[in-house]
Length: 73
Image (cartoon, rainbow, N blue to C red; front, top):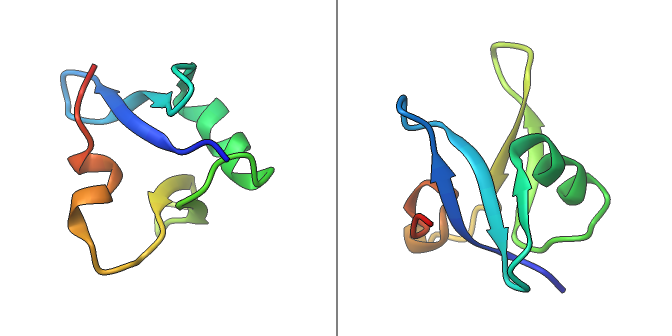
């Protein structure tokens, strides 16, 4: 199963694109849809206090695999 291995951030530090383990590059909305469809492991989509949906790593106690801590590309 795919997983996200790297991210691209905008000037504000927000993740705008993600790279999968197979090398595919998807935008944030595509990544959310992949998570909802169960196409990628280790992430989930939740609704934040702002009412928007956000992508996040599954809580496993390991900060090194949090999306914000993945290498950039």
